[in-house]
Amino acid sequence: MSWIKGLIWGIVGFLLGSGLMFLVGQPLGSEPMVTVGYIFFLSAWLLGAGVWDHWARGWLGLANKPTPTQKSHGVARYFMFSTDHKVIGVQYLVTFIGLLMLAGALAMVIRIQLMTPNGPLDPQTYNTVMSMHGIIMVAVAVAIITGSLGNYFVPILIGAEDMAFPRLNALSYWLVPPVSILLVVGALLPGGFTSGWRVYPPLAEQGGISMLLFLLAFLTFGLSSIISALNFLVTIIRMRAPGMTWGRLPIFVWGVFTSSMLALVFTQFVASALLMEIMDRVLGMVFFAPDQGGGAVMYQHIFWFYSHPAVYVMVLPAYGLIMEVVAHFARKPLFGYKYAVGGLLGIVGLSGIVWAHHMFTSGIQDFLTAPFMLATELISIPTGMVFLVTLGTIWQGKMRLTTPMLFALGFLYNFAIGGLTGIFNADAPTDLQLHATYWVVGHFHYTIMGGEIFAFLAGFFYWFPKLTGRMYSEKLGKLQFAITFITFNLLYTPMMIAGLYGMNRHVATYPPELAGLNQFMSIAGFVLGASFLIFIYNLLTSWARGPLTSANPWQLRTLEWQTSSPPPEHNFDHLPTITGHPYDYGIEGSTHASVTVGHAAVAPAAE
Image 1: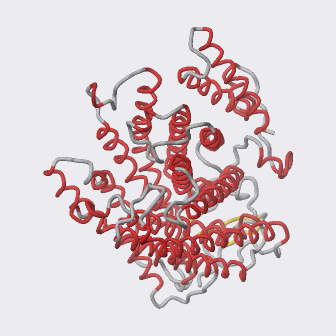
Image 2: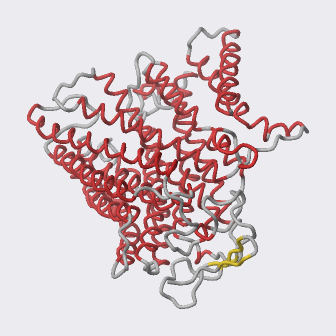
């Protein structure tokens, strides 16, 4: 198995790299030794996991070994280095669902701490738990839709047989497990994480070896994100089937495309900031040392220059996915398709000029406040355009309230609250009062969990029959939605109220007057966490023994529903030909594509 071989090679690589540093005079456990050891570990991990067998041998004139296929390895190929985009999508899916559950468990620990004004954890342990929860959930939000559903379905939706760079696609996934390993090891070491998930200096440069591992993990994940974004862009630009013009792309593909544009351009900046922090720690440089000419505020500028566009890296695929689900289950053409695409592109264009609204409390120059307030308000225009397109699609549609549609509607409600509360954060006078409070925590979770995670669940249930060839339990799906939606709002609306009363974020204690409100939130949080146990049970039992389903159980038009469930290795027997728009329901004689399955041409009828 690639995991076992990669881990063995990685340990040998770490020992080799750290041993070399010891030989040149570095003491045991020093940060230069750990850093060089990790570089060797990562390289050896990748080689052992499959890069050597299936890629690097060719660099030396040797024959590369064939990658595993369904016929040769069956289910075992999901644990191996595969270049099949569908296998990689499932690998991402399982990995990030696991990380989502871990982050959720850490959230339960946070709510246990906040049940009382002075909970059982000491401040340092609480900081470590909070930092772990934050960075894992950010990683999940960045990659859970694009990495899993995007990898699996974007090539099929555009009529391609795979991604443009299949081995780079595999590489982007196999960079993720070392990130998890570093975070878990760092959390268990003495000292833990002291800086929060944003790793602000000087705290990120003063902590122990755990903070170095945190920085290395963050940097590695950024590299994976850049590689993945480049692959998606080339795939969508160069590998569309005949007739798949830009005006016929499914809207989910547009969401992944625009998200990838942002990830490719802006992730490089946070990677540079993290690299400078590592160099400050390991090489004694002074990029962020105020007493030696550096500055912590400079880090914030670089960090937020990436991290606000990163919100849209997370949300743009979610927008596309929700519009995809709503258009099909409302059974009508997507209202204002061109306006939806324009809104997505408008967000891309404006997202790089709004970062400093995160820094209204950091002491930026007064003359910068008004321009960044204006830019932040302007980005609400393309965002609102996408939102209104979705509402217009629902209007007078023949809605089928399936589990995917319910989660899509939940997304719209939650994201509306997240967007409206964000207006207060964009206004400097109110942000000065709210910035360090639980108002921001509530707003952020409405935007990311209420948006991103609800969208993921909508997409997961929507495509579950295609992924597995089986149908999930609709009763359990709707039960999960009801509990998740209600308890989500019971948790995060009071959180914003607590912020208005002055409850500070990032601290392990709070005024006794807010104890009742926090107890209410914690109970809601525990029930919210339990609702995901229903999700896991539904997933596992349906995947194992759910009722078999047809290739197109929803009777939809897009290409993924015109091939078998699950799709064959190369997606289609022959290259499909695109003949119409994917959402032209109710237009007589309209078809989206002509697809050959076996020896028969399939052209789905309009509805």
